Image: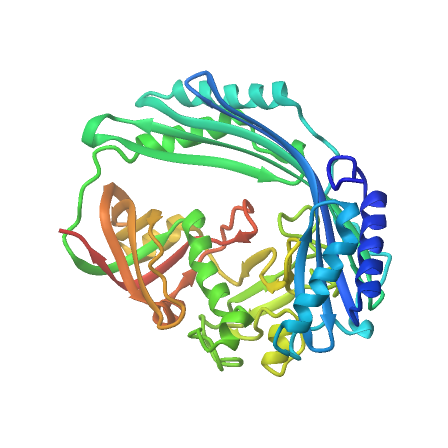
Length: 451
């Protein structure tokens, strides 16, 4: 059978997974694992009431990883009838590969056991094009109705349902189904050199939990209009306050530095720092793949290990690296079940991340600081987890006496990541909108570059 939409449920995928492992064993693999993934997705994009794009996709893929002793290789398989040839090709590739005893299946005794927890990831809702279009129109109409908005940057609504089966010759077999519903709007205000844009959106596992489409449109519009007539600051030192949407990226830099793959390469400012203070005392960064309806939730990881909460930072000190089996072996540690995986090789990644121990909110951080820049948008990729340098283009608002004074643009904010981590003051206003759920953050002593 072709690996296409005909693989319509996890029973079909399970059969394909078992067939893939059998083909690998017959081809001479000493061990193997496979991921069979299938799904459907639909999305629409409108601009000024005109349909710009409608996408509908469905299909499935098989990834087969084989081991011959300490040598391994991975192949993608296009159809069930190709399994025998693909397995033979993978085994031949593995025999020609260099030995690496850190790359291997998870040990049988470490594997998660059924029944797996139900994390309520699949609402079985698959809205059609008409329903998605209605949501998109509601967003755009509300957005364009806000005074000051001059154009639409586009609105979109989408839905996806995915099914995945992981199977290994060590005895693991598990299946997960999940839905993801999304909608977003981008507004444009002003014209010519005064033009500004901003966006807002909502992503949830369950359709019923999505924000109201009209409210998404109005929020995108309000965020855009308030940026009009932005000024450029003179270069200075000062306090920056990240709103939660951009604060998630700052927390993401810490997660990248705590990723075991970077640490194992010696390419991280947090290498060798377990047990050392990296954030203010009292702050905990928790990764929890077991959160019901979480955007990154999963009952087991990409190698079959059970999911469980993990404190990456505990009471301000670095408590753990983000590890899959291979990176854990390279570091002489034990995997903490953070293997992420499509149909390729696993690699370590965080799941649902939250910041605990902060206090106050965005307004209280601004009041405490007195004056500085409230950053609502960051540009560029200027955060280096190898040497710790940080320099990003930014836009937002200059505030004085704790109150917004005027919008600013074409500035940079720069510093040293280790110093920024140590100086960060966290609020307790995380909005619960993304996989990395960060609160507002204030950091003193930043370089604010302008004219």
